[in-house]
Length: 169
Image (cartoon, rainbow, N blue to C red; front, top):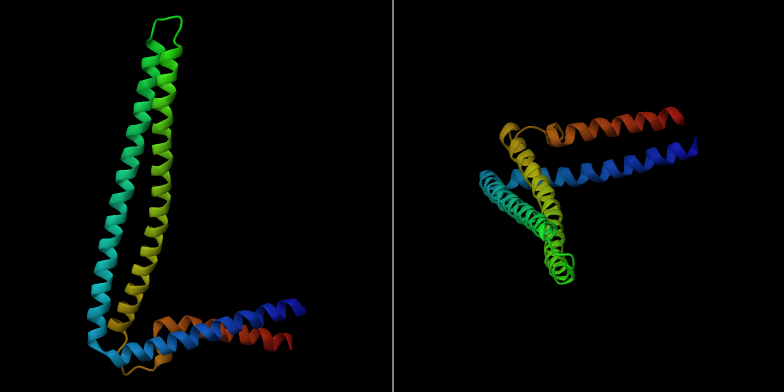
């Protein structure tokens, strides 16, 4: 029972910190006024352009990787179609051609994976900007800070955790 209680207390502490941070953010946003909406809108446009660039890099790397794979298949086909009994020299050439292409494919796969990470980060950034803009557009500045949609759910969760703790006590 003590473990559950300490876990709930830890969750409560984390939520309290989130609430504090978001309240500060909302107060700051309200003090900046309409200029903040313009700033956030511009940041959103830039983040979306960044995403488009990342997607383009991913597409290009995938195309290059497919091209190299096709080239490897063509070299293997070339080797298999040779009619000589002793194909040692051609085997050496095949291995060299396949090796550098395989290395290039591995490099491209690494680029693709790194760019997917960047894309996910950028998507998260865009989502945060959209939420902030939505809150600024939908919630009038004279509404109490705790009525901001970014805080309402957290405040509800905090109350639920407090109720759990009081039942256990």
